Amino acid sequence: MTEVVAERRVDASTDGVPMPQRLWAILTIALGLTLAVLDGGIANVALPTIAREVNTSPANSIWVVNAYQLAVTISLLPLSSLGEIYGYRRIYQYGFVLFTCASLACAMSSSLATLTAARVLQGFGAAGIMSVNSALIRFIYPRRWIGRGVGLNATVGSIASALGPSVAAAILSVAPWPWLFAVNVPLGVLGAIIALRALPDTPRSGIRFDGASAALQAIAFGTLLFAVSEMGHGDSWRHVSVELVVAAVAGGVLVFRQLSRTAPMLPVDLFRIPLFALSVASSICSFIAQAIGQVSLPFLFQHHFSLDQVMTGLLMTPWPLVVAVIAPFAGRLADRYPAGLLGGCGMTVMGLGLLAMSLLPEHPTTLDIVWRMTVCGLGFGFFNTPNNRAIITSAPPLRTGGASGMQATARLLGQSMGAALVALIFTAFPDNGPVVALSVAAVAAGVAAAVSFSRLAA
Image (cartoon, rainbow, N blue to C red; front, top):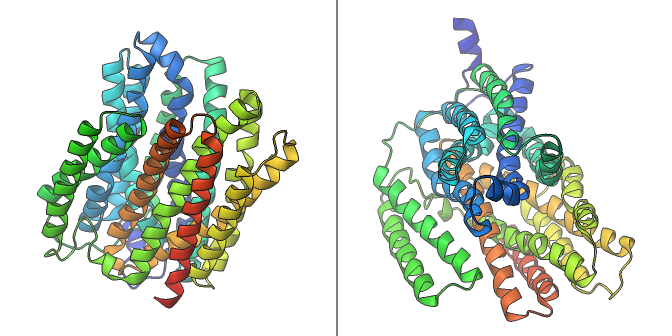
Protein backbone atom coordinates (compact mmCIF):
# COMPACT_ATOMS: atom_id res chain seq x y z
CA MET A 1 0.00 0.00 0.00
CA THR A 2 2.90 2.32 0.84
CA GLU A 3 4.38 1.72 -2.61
CA VAL A 4 1.07 2.58 -4.30
CA VAL A 5 0.76 5.84 -2.37
CA ALA A 6 4.38 6.69 -3.06
CA GLU A 7 3.87 6.07 -6.76
CA ARG A 8 0.97 8.55 -6.80
CA ARG A 9 2.91 11.34 -5.14
CA VAL A 10 4.15 14.03 -7.50
CA ASP A 11 6.13 17.09 -6.45
CA ALA A 12 6.76 20.24 -8.44
CA SER A 13 9.88 18.82 -10.08
CA THR A 14 8.20 15.72 -11.51
CA ASP A 15 7.31 15.84 -15.19
CA GLY A 16 3.89 14.20 -15.27
CA VAL A 17 2.88 10.78 -13.92
CA PRO A 18 3.98 7.42 -15.33
CA MET A 19 1.97 5.07 -17.48
CA PRO A 20 -0.51 3.40 -17.00
CA GLN A 21 -1.45 5.69 -14.10
CA ARG A 22 -1.62 8.56 -16.56
CA LEU A 23 -4.30 6.80 -18.63
CA TRP A 24 -6.50 6.19 -15.58
CA ALA A 25 -6.01 9.80 -14.46
CA ILE A 26 -7.01 11.06 -17.91
CA LEU A 27 -10.08 8.80 -17.80
CA THR A 28 -11.39 10.20 -14.51
CA ILE A 29 -10.68 13.79 -15.64
CA ALA A 30 -12.61 13.17 -18.89
CA LEU A 31 -15.48 11.44 -17.05
CA GLY A 32 -15.85 14.25 -14.51
CA LEU A 33 -15.80 16.95 -17.18
CA THR A 34 -18.37 15.06 -19.27
CA LEU A 35 -20.82 14.76 -16.38
CA ALA A 36 -20.35 18.40 -15.29
CA VAL A 37 -20.82 19.78 -18.82
CA LEU A 38 -23.78 17.52 -19.61
CA ASP A 39 -25.62 18.48 -16.43
CA GLY A 40 -24.95 22.14 -17.11
CA GLY A 41 -27.39 22.00 -20.03
CA ILE A 42 -29.16 18.67 -20.01
CA ALA A 43 -31.93 19.97 -17.73
CA ASN A 44 -32.91 22.61 -20.33
CA VAL A 45 -34.54 19.98 -22.51
CA ALA A 46 -36.58 18.60 -19.62
CA LEU A 47 -37.79 21.92 -18.14
CA PRO A 48 -41.32 21.73 -19.62
CA THR A 49 -41.73 18.17 -18.33
CA ILE A 50 -40.28 19.00 -14.91
CA ALA A 51 -42.52 22.08 -14.58
CA ARG A 52 -45.59 19.99 -15.33
CA GLU A 53 -44.75 17.09 -13.02
CA VAL A 54 -43.73 19.17 -9.99
CA ASN A 55 -46.70 21.52 -10.47
CA THR A 56 -44.85 24.77 -11.06
CA SER A 57 -44.84 27.44 -13.75
CA PRO A 58 -42.38 27.42 -16.65
CA ALA A 59 -40.87 30.67 -15.34
CA ASN A 60 -40.21 29.16 -11.91
CA SER A 61 -38.77 26.01 -13.45
CA ILE A 62 -35.88 28.09 -14.82
CA TRP A 63 -34.43 27.93 -11.30
CA VAL A 64 -33.51 24.31 -12.01
CA VAL A 65 -30.94 25.69 -14.47
CA ASN A 66 -30.08 28.98 -12.74
CA ALA A 67 -29.42 27.36 -9.35
CA TYR A 68 -26.81 25.07 -10.88
CA GLN A 69 -25.07 27.84 -12.83
CA LEU A 70 -25.03 30.24 -9.87
CA ALA A 71 -23.59 27.60 -7.51
CA VAL A 72 -20.84 26.79 -10.00
CA THR A 73 -19.94 30.43 -10.60
CA ILE A 74 -19.68 31.56 -6.97
CA SER A 75 -17.67 28.52 -5.83
CA LEU A 76 -15.08 28.08 -8.59
CA LEU A 77 -12.44 30.42 -7.14
CA PRO A 78 -12.86 29.35 -3.47
CA LEU A 79 -12.57 25.70 -4.46
CA SER A 80 -9.51 26.33 -6.63
CA SER A 81 -7.98 28.10 -3.61
CA LEU A 82 -8.76 25.08 -1.43
CA GLY A 83 -7.08 22.96 -4.10
CA GLU A 84 -3.87 24.95 -3.67
CA ILE A 85 -4.09 24.55 0.11
CA TYR A 86 -5.11 20.88 0.44
CA GLY A 87 -4.21 19.43 -2.96
CA TYR A 88 -6.12 19.37 -6.24
CA ARG A 89 -6.74 15.63 -6.03
CA ARG A 90 -8.66 15.94 -2.76
CA ILE A 91 -10.89 18.76 -4.05
CA TYR A 92 -11.57 16.81 -7.26
CA GLN A 93 -12.50 13.69 -5.29
CA TYR A 94 -14.79 15.56 -2.90
CA GLY A 95 -16.37 17.36 -5.84
CA PHE A 96 -17.02 14.06 -7.59
CA VAL A 97 -18.57 12.53 -4.46
CA LEU A 98 -20.77 15.58 -3.82
CA PHE A 99 -21.86 15.71 -7.47
CA THR A 100 -22.82 12.03 -7.35
CA CYS A 101 -24.76 12.31 -4.08
CA ALA A 102 -26.52 15.47 -5.31
CA SER A 103 -27.45 13.70 -8.55
CA LEU A 104 -29.16 11.01 -6.50
CA ALA A 105 -30.96 13.73 -4.50
CA CYS A 106 -32.11 15.35 -7.77
CA ALA A 107 -33.49 12.02 -8.98
CA MET A 108 -35.41 11.56 -5.73
CA SER A 109 -36.85 15.10 -5.64
CA SER A 110 -40.61 15.54 -5.87
CA SER A 111 -40.94 19.33 -5.63
CA LEU A 112 -39.31 22.38 -7.16
CA ALA A 113 -37.83 23.41 -3.79
CA THR A 114 -36.08 20.09 -3.15
CA LEU A 115 -34.93 19.81 -6.77
CA THR A 116 -33.51 23.34 -6.72
CA ALA A 117 -31.69 22.68 -3.44
CA ALA A 118 -30.25 19.47 -4.87
CA ARG A 119 -29.17 21.33 -8.02
CA VAL A 120 -27.31 23.86 -5.85
CA LEU A 121 -25.38 21.01 -4.23
CA GLN A 122 -24.80 19.48 -7.64
CA GLY A 123 -23.43 22.81 -8.85
CA PHE A 124 -20.98 22.93 -5.93
CA GLY A 125 -19.87 19.39 -6.80
CA ALA A 126 -19.43 20.33 -10.47
CA ALA A 127 -17.39 23.36 -9.41
CA GLY A 128 -15.14 21.04 -7.39
CA ILE A 129 -14.52 19.09 -10.60
CA MET A 130 -14.11 22.07 -12.94
CA SER A 131 -12.12 24.35 -10.63
CA VAL A 132 -9.09 22.02 -10.48
CA ASN A 133 -9.59 20.09 -13.72
CA SER A 134 -7.06 22.07 -15.72
CA ALA A 135 -4.69 22.33 -12.75
CA LEU A 136 -4.48 18.53 -12.54
CA ILE A 137 -3.64 18.30 -16.25
CA ARG A 138 -0.45 20.24 -15.55
CA PHE A 139 0.68 17.49 -13.16
CA ILE A 140 -0.67 14.49 -15.10
CA TYR A 141 1.01 15.17 -18.44
CA PRO A 142 4.70 15.79 -19.17
CA ARG A 143 5.25 19.50 -19.76
CA ARG A 144 5.91 18.97 -23.46
CA TRP A 145 2.44 17.39 -23.81
CA ILE A 146 0.35 19.83 -21.76
CA GLY A 147 -1.16 21.25 -24.96
CA ARG A 148 -2.35 17.78 -25.90
CA GLY A 149 -3.93 17.36 -22.48
CA VAL A 150 -5.75 20.69 -22.74
CA GLY A 151 -6.79 19.74 -26.28
CA LEU A 152 -8.26 16.45 -25.07
CA ASN A 153 -10.21 18.34 -22.40
CA ALA A 154 -11.56 20.70 -25.04
CA THR A 155 -12.56 17.73 -27.19
CA VAL A 156 -14.39 16.03 -24.32
CA GLY A 157 -16.14 19.27 -23.34
CA SER A 158 -17.22 19.98 -26.92
CA ILE A 159 -18.55 16.46 -27.47
CA ALA A 160 -20.46 16.57 -24.17
CA SER A 161 -21.90 19.97 -25.08
CA ALA A 162 -22.93 18.77 -28.55
CA LEU A 163 -24.49 15.53 -27.28
CA GLY A 164 -26.30 17.10 -24.31
CA PRO A 165 -29.69 17.74 -25.99
CA SER A 166 -29.59 14.38 -27.80
CA VAL A 167 -28.75 12.47 -24.62
CA ALA A 168 -31.55 14.23 -22.75
CA ALA A 169 -34.04 13.52 -25.52
CA ALA A 170 -32.99 9.85 -25.66
CA ILE A 171 -33.41 9.38 -21.90
CA LEU A 172 -36.76 11.17 -21.83
CA SER A 173 -38.03 8.99 -24.69
CA VAL A 174 -37.72 5.85 -22.55
CA ALA A 175 -37.77 7.05 -18.93
CA PRO A 176 -39.15 9.86 -16.70
CA TRP A 177 -37.09 13.01 -16.02
CA PRO A 178 -35.48 11.81 -12.72
CA TRP A 179 -33.38 9.41 -14.81
CA LEU A 180 -31.59 12.43 -16.31
CA PHE A 181 -29.86 12.68 -12.93
CA ALA A 182 -29.96 9.03 -11.82
CA VAL A 183 -27.68 7.94 -14.68
CA ASN A 184 -24.93 10.06 -13.11
CA VAL A 185 -24.79 7.91 -9.98
CA PRO A 186 -23.01 4.76 -11.24
CA LEU A 187 -20.71 6.84 -13.44
CA GLY A 188 -19.96 9.16 -10.52
CA VAL A 189 -19.11 6.25 -8.21
CA LEU A 190 -16.79 4.80 -10.85
CA GLY A 191 -15.11 8.17 -11.46
CA ALA A 192 -14.59 8.83 -7.73
CA ILE A 193 -12.95 5.42 -7.25
CA ILE A 194 -10.61 5.95 -10.19
CA ALA A 195 -9.77 9.45 -8.95
CA LEU A 196 -8.82 8.05 -5.54
CA ARG A 197 -6.33 5.61 -7.06
CA ALA A 198 -4.99 7.42 -10.13
CA LEU A 199 -4.80 11.18 -9.59
CA PRO A 200 -1.43 12.51 -8.43
CA ASP A 201 -0.72 14.38 -5.24
CA THR A 202 0.29 17.98 -5.95
CA PRO A 203 2.28 20.69 -4.13
CA ARG A 204 0.38 22.50 -1.37
CA SER A 205 0.71 26.16 -0.53
CA GLY A 206 0.33 25.80 3.24
CA ILE A 207 -1.65 29.04 3.57
CA ARG A 208 -4.93 29.45 5.45
CA PHE A 209 -8.25 29.58 3.62
CA ASP A 210 -9.64 33.12 3.37
CA GLY A 211 -13.32 32.75 4.24
CA ALA A 212 -14.04 36.49 4.11
CA SER A 213 -12.71 36.71 0.56
CA ALA A 214 -14.82 33.70 -0.41
CA ALA A 215 -17.93 35.50 0.87
CA LEU A 216 -17.00 38.73 -0.92
CA GLN A 217 -16.40 37.02 -4.26
CA ALA A 218 -19.68 35.10 -3.92
CA ILE A 219 -21.53 38.39 -3.40
CA ALA A 220 -19.65 40.13 -6.21
CA PHE A 221 -20.06 37.41 -8.84
CA GLY A 222 -23.54 36.37 -7.69
CA THR A 223 -25.04 39.87 -7.85
CA LEU A 224 -23.20 40.60 -11.10
CA LEU A 225 -24.73 37.54 -12.76
CA PHE A 226 -28.18 38.41 -11.42
CA ALA A 227 -27.82 41.97 -12.74
CA VAL A 228 -26.64 40.80 -16.15
CA SER A 229 -29.47 38.27 -16.38
CA GLU A 230 -32.15 40.77 -15.31
CA MET A 231 -30.72 43.41 -17.65
CA GLY A 232 -31.10 41.01 -20.54
CA HIS A 233 -34.68 40.19 -19.59
CA GLY A 234 -35.76 43.81 -19.31
CA ASP A 235 -36.06 44.10 -15.53
CA SER A 236 -36.27 47.49 -13.82
CA TRP A 237 -33.11 49.55 -14.28
CA ARG A 238 -33.42 50.57 -10.63
CA HIS A 239 -33.06 46.94 -9.50
CA VAL A 240 -30.26 46.31 -11.98
CA SER A 241 -28.40 49.46 -10.87
CA VAL A 242 -28.60 48.46 -7.20
CA GLU A 243 -27.27 44.99 -7.99
CA LEU A 244 -24.43 46.41 -10.10
CA VAL A 245 -23.48 48.81 -7.28
CA VAL A 246 -23.46 45.93 -4.76
CA ALA A 247 -21.33 43.86 -7.13
CA ALA A 248 -18.92 46.76 -7.70
CA VAL A 249 -18.54 47.52 -3.97
CA ALA A 250 -18.06 43.86 -3.03
CA GLY A 251 -15.64 43.44 -5.94
CA GLY A 252 -13.66 46.55 -4.97
CA VAL A 253 -13.33 45.43 -1.35
CA LEU A 254 -12.34 41.97 -2.56
CA VAL A 255 -9.59 43.30 -4.85
CA PHE A 256 -8.24 45.60 -2.11
CA ARG A 257 -8.20 42.68 0.32
CA GLN A 258 -6.46 40.40 -2.17
CA LEU A 259 -3.63 42.83 -2.99
CA SER A 260 -1.83 42.04 0.26
CA ARG A 261 -2.25 38.25 0.03
CA THR A 262 0.55 35.89 -0.95
CA ALA A 263 -1.77 33.52 -2.82
CA PRO A 264 -5.01 35.49 -3.32
CA MET A 265 -8.28 33.69 -4.07
CA LEU A 266 -9.05 36.19 -6.82
CA PRO A 267 -5.71 35.83 -8.61
CA VAL A 268 -4.75 39.51 -8.76
CA ASP A 269 -1.11 38.45 -8.50
CA LEU A 270 -1.44 36.46 -11.73
CA PHE A 271 -2.98 39.45 -13.53
CA ARG A 272 0.41 41.14 -13.15
CA ILE A 273 1.66 38.54 -15.66
CA PRO A 274 0.84 40.04 -19.10
CA LEU A 275 0.35 36.65 -20.81
CA PHE A 276 -2.11 35.54 -18.13
CA ALA A 277 -4.09 38.80 -18.08
CA LEU A 278 -4.38 39.02 -21.87
CA SER A 279 -5.31 35.33 -22.13
CA VAL A 280 -8.14 35.75 -19.61
CA ALA A 281 -9.37 38.90 -21.39
CA SER A 282 -9.37 37.17 -24.78
CA SER A 283 -11.16 34.18 -23.22
CA ILE A 284 -14.00 36.36 -21.92
CA CYS A 285 -14.38 38.08 -25.30
CA SER A 286 -14.32 34.75 -27.17
CA PHE A 287 -17.03 33.21 -24.98
CA ILE A 288 -19.16 36.35 -25.35
CA ALA A 289 -18.95 35.83 -29.11
CA GLN A 290 -19.62 32.10 -28.84
CA ALA A 291 -22.62 32.56 -26.51
CA ILE A 292 -24.18 35.26 -28.70
CA GLY A 293 -23.82 33.00 -31.72
CA GLN A 294 -25.13 29.82 -30.15
CA VAL A 295 -28.08 31.54 -28.42
CA SER A 296 -29.19 33.57 -31.44
CA LEU A 297 -28.72 30.96 -34.18
CA PRO A 298 -31.72 28.77 -33.22
CA PHE A 299 -33.95 31.85 -33.49
CA LEU A 300 -32.46 32.65 -36.89
CA PHE A 301 -33.07 29.12 -38.14
CA GLN A 302 -36.61 28.76 -36.77
CA HIS A 303 -38.05 32.28 -37.01
CA HIS A 304 -36.33 33.60 -40.13
CA PHE A 305 -35.85 30.41 -42.15
CA SER A 306 -38.87 28.46 -40.77
CA LEU A 307 -36.86 25.34 -39.98
CA ASP A 308 -38.20 22.80 -37.46
CA GLN A 309 -36.54 21.88 -34.17
CA VAL A 310 -34.95 18.69 -35.47
CA MET A 311 -33.33 20.47 -38.41
CA THR A 312 -32.21 23.28 -36.11
CA GLY A 313 -30.51 20.78 -33.83
CA LEU A 314 -28.74 19.14 -36.74
CA LEU A 315 -27.53 22.46 -38.13
CA MET A 316 -26.19 23.49 -34.72
CA THR A 317 -24.04 20.34 -34.54
CA PRO A 318 -21.18 21.21 -36.96
CA TRP A 319 -19.80 23.97 -34.71
CA PRO A 320 -19.09 21.88 -31.55
CA LEU A 321 -18.28 18.82 -33.66
CA VAL A 322 -15.52 20.65 -35.54
CA VAL A 323 -14.19 22.04 -32.25
CA ALA A 324 -13.96 18.48 -30.93
CA VAL A 325 -12.07 17.34 -34.04
CA ILE A 326 -9.71 20.32 -34.15
CA ALA A 327 -8.93 20.62 -30.43
CA PRO A 328 -6.34 17.77 -30.21
CA PHE A 329 -4.56 19.08 -33.32
CA ALA A 330 -4.60 22.62 -31.90
CA GLY A 331 -3.22 21.22 -28.65
CA ARG A 332 -0.20 19.77 -30.44
CA LEU A 333 0.38 23.08 -32.23
CA ALA A 334 0.08 24.92 -28.90
CA ASP A 335 3.08 22.97 -27.62
CA ARG A 336 5.15 24.42 -30.50
CA TYR A 337 3.76 27.86 -31.45
CA PRO A 338 2.74 30.96 -29.44
CA ALA A 339 -0.82 31.07 -28.13
CA GLY A 340 -1.11 34.67 -29.32
CA LEU A 341 -0.58 33.64 -32.93
CA LEU A 342 -2.83 30.57 -32.88
CA GLY A 343 -5.55 32.26 -30.84
CA GLY A 344 -5.51 35.44 -32.91
CA CYS A 345 -5.81 33.51 -36.16
CA GLY A 346 -8.54 31.32 -34.67
CA MET A 347 -10.66 34.24 -33.48
CA THR A 348 -10.21 35.99 -36.82
CA VAL A 349 -11.55 32.91 -38.59
CA MET A 350 -14.44 32.59 -36.13
CA GLY A 351 -15.30 36.28 -36.58
CA LEU A 352 -15.41 35.82 -40.35
CA GLY A 353 -17.65 32.78 -39.90
CA LEU A 354 -20.06 34.74 -37.68
CA LEU A 355 -20.08 37.62 -40.15
CA ALA A 356 -20.85 35.16 -42.95
CA MET A 357 -23.73 33.76 -40.88
CA SER A 358 -25.18 37.27 -40.52
CA LEU A 359 -25.05 37.64 -44.32
CA LEU A 360 -26.96 34.46 -45.15
CA PRO A 361 -29.36 34.80 -48.10
CA GLU A 362 -33.12 34.84 -47.57
CA HIS A 363 -33.45 31.20 -48.61
CA PRO A 364 -30.17 29.47 -47.73
CA THR A 365 -29.38 25.90 -48.62
CA THR A 366 -28.17 23.43 -46.01
CA LEU A 367 -24.67 23.74 -47.46
CA ASP A 368 -24.80 27.56 -47.06
CA ILE A 369 -25.34 27.11 -43.33
CA VAL A 370 -23.09 24.09 -42.72
CA TRP A 371 -19.92 25.58 -44.19
CA ARG A 372 -20.38 28.78 -42.18
CA MET A 373 -20.93 26.80 -38.95
CA THR A 374 -17.84 24.75 -39.80
CA VAL A 375 -15.77 27.93 -40.15
CA CYS A 376 -16.99 29.12 -36.73
CA GLY A 377 -16.06 25.81 -35.13
CA LEU A 378 -12.70 25.75 -36.88
CA GLY A 379 -11.82 29.20 -35.57
CA PHE A 380 -12.95 28.54 -32.00
CA GLY A 381 -11.14 25.19 -31.97
CA PHE A 382 -7.85 26.82 -32.91
CA PHE A 383 -8.34 29.50 -30.25
CA ASN A 384 -9.63 27.67 -27.18
CA THR A 385 -6.99 25.00 -26.59
CA PRO A 386 -3.89 27.24 -27.01
CA ASN A 387 -5.55 29.95 -24.93
CA ASN A 388 -6.38 27.57 -22.07
CA ARG A 389 -2.83 26.22 -22.17
CA ALA A 390 -1.47 29.78 -21.95
CA ILE A 391 -3.65 30.56 -18.91
CA ILE A 392 -2.50 27.45 -17.03
CA THR A 393 1.21 27.46 -17.93
CA SER A 394 1.74 31.20 -17.46
CA ALA A 395 1.11 30.79 -13.72
CA PRO A 396 3.76 29.45 -11.32
CA PRO A 397 3.18 25.76 -10.41
CA LEU A 398 1.96 26.60 -6.89
CA ARG A 399 -0.63 29.02 -8.35
CA THR A 400 -2.04 26.59 -10.91
CA GLY A 401 -5.25 26.33 -8.91
CA GLY A 402 -5.89 30.07 -9.14
CA ALA A 403 -5.24 29.96 -12.87
CA SER A 404 -7.56 26.97 -13.33
CA GLY A 405 -10.36 28.62 -11.36
CA MET A 406 -9.97 31.87 -13.28
CA GLN A 407 -10.07 30.01 -16.59
CA ALA A 408 -13.44 28.45 -15.73
CA THR A 409 -14.74 31.73 -14.27
CA ALA A 410 -13.79 33.63 -17.45
CA ARG A 411 -15.75 31.11 -19.51
CA LEU A 412 -18.88 31.42 -17.36
CA LEU A 413 -18.71 35.23 -17.25
CA GLY A 414 -18.35 35.41 -21.02
CA GLN A 415 -21.25 33.02 -21.60
CA SER A 416 -23.51 34.89 -19.16
CA MET A 417 -22.69 38.28 -20.68
CA GLY A 418 -23.21 36.93 -24.20
CA ALA A 419 -26.63 35.50 -23.34
CA ALA A 420 -27.67 38.81 -21.73
CA LEU A 421 -26.53 40.75 -24.79
CA VAL A 422 -28.70 38.55 -27.00
CA ALA A 423 -31.75 39.38 -24.88
CA LEU A 424 -30.96 43.11 -25.07
CA ILE A 425 -30.45 42.97 -28.84
CA PHE A 426 -33.67 41.04 -29.38
CA THR A 427 -35.55 43.68 -27.37
CA ALA A 428 -33.98 46.57 -29.30
CA PHE A 429 -34.33 44.92 -32.74
CA PRO A 430 -37.48 42.78 -32.61
CA ASP A 431 -37.62 42.29 -36.39
CA ASN A 432 -33.98 41.52 -37.09
CA GLY A 433 -32.53 40.54 -33.73
CA PRO A 434 -30.64 37.34 -34.69
CA VAL A 435 -28.87 39.01 -37.63
CA VAL A 436 -27.81 42.00 -35.50
CA ALA A 437 -26.70 39.65 -32.71
CA LEU A 438 -24.48 37.70 -35.10
CA SER A 439 -22.89 40.94 -36.27
CA VAL A 440 -22.18 41.89 -32.64
CA ALA A 441 -20.74 38.41 -32.09
CA ALA A 442 -18.39 38.95 -35.04
CA VAL A 443 -17.21 42.22 -33.45
CA ALA A 444 -16.62 40.45 -30.10
CA ALA A 445 -14.58 37.78 -31.91
CA GLY A 446 -12.58 40.55 -33.58
CA VAL A 447 -11.81 42.10 -30.18
CA ALA A 448 -10.75 38.66 -28.90
CA ALA A 449 -8.45 38.31 -31.94
CA ALA A 450 -6.87 41.73 -31.34
CA VAL A 451 -6.26 40.96 -27.65
CA SER A 452 -4.86 37.56 -28.57
CA PHE A 453 -2.43 38.96 -31.14
CA SER A 454 -1.27 41.54 -28.58
CA ARG A 455 0.22 38.66 -26.56
CA LEU A 456 2.94 38.32 -29.19
CA ALA A 457 4.42 41.58 -27.94
CA ALA A 458 3.84 40.83 -24.23
